[in-house]
Length: 130
Image 1: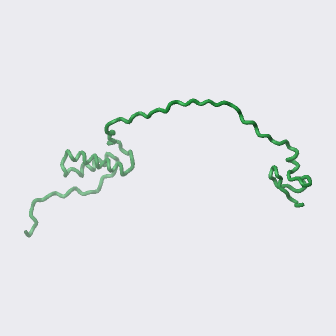
Image 2 (image 1 turned 90 degrees about the horizontal axis):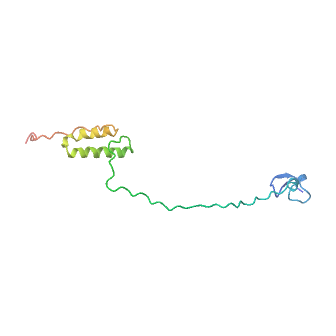
């Protein structure tokens, strides 16, 4: 017989002297009482279900503008919002003031001003040499 043997019950590897002749279970497992599985509890659980709620209807009409909320949203959204605010104000103003309005709107959104040169002035002089 081998010097070592694995118990069929506790799965420990023990020396051959811990087993009876030809037994596959060690003496320690043979002398300890067998653990019995506990009977499942037979408690009654009652659950009540409520009727599913319907979500509140969304308010009709346009959503409120988020203008004036500095720092909300990512950088691209804030840049578009600043440009839209400047263009709305430009519709009521003159085109040459666009650069100033855009700069003010970007500052209101917490963005750095663009380094765009002011638009060139239109000159009605004819080119030289004509």
